[in-house]
Length: 255
Image (cartoon, rainbow, N blue to C red; front, side, top):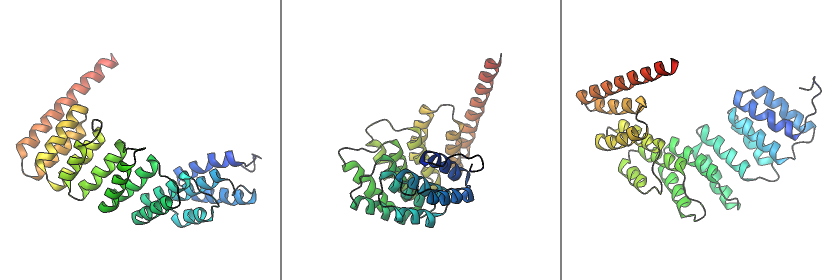
C-alpha cells in the first residue's frame, strides 16, 4: 500500500483492518497499527474500534484489551466489540463483567451488545448470568428481546437441561418462534433425550421448513437414542421422499 503511495487516513484504515481480522492476517494488522501511530490516527475513535475488532478476530485478546484500555473515549461499538471478542474466545465471565462495567459507566447496551453477551453465556453455561441479562432486557420498556436473543436463551437453557423452562419462554414470545428457536430446542432435546418435547419442536420445524432434511435427521437421532428404531426408519423414508421431490424439481428447472 505504501509502495503504491496510497495516502493512509482513517477511512483507509477502517477499510483495511476488518479484512485483516476476517482473513486472520495478524502481521498485516500489526503493521497497520504501527502506521496508525506514526500518522497520529490513534486518536480517532473509529480507527481504535477497528483495531480492537481486528485483534479480537485474530484471537489476540490481550492486544485488543490494551487498545481498549488506552482509549480516551469509548462508544457502544467499542464496548460491544470487546464483549463479543471475549465471548468468541471462551472468556464468558470476562464478557459479562465488562458488560456490567459498561452499564455502570452509563453506556446503554444495544441489541447487538445483548446478543454478544447472551451468546457468551450460552456457550459457557452461565445460566444465572444469562437469565439475569435476558430478564434485564425484558424489563427495559424501550427494548424487547428479538429472535436472536430468544435463540440464545433457549440454547443456554437447553444446554443446561432446563428444557421445560426453555419451552415456557418460547410460549411467551410476542411473535411466532422462528426455525432457529425451535432448532435450538430440538437440538437440546436430542442431547437430553426428551422425546415428547423434541417431537413438538420437530413438528413446528416441519411446518416452517418442510423440505429441510436436517430437521428430520435430528428427530431420527432422537428416536435412535431412545431405541425407537421404527420411528427413525420412517423418518428416513420421509427424507428419501423429500430428496426425490427435490431431484424432480431440479430436473424440471433444467429443461
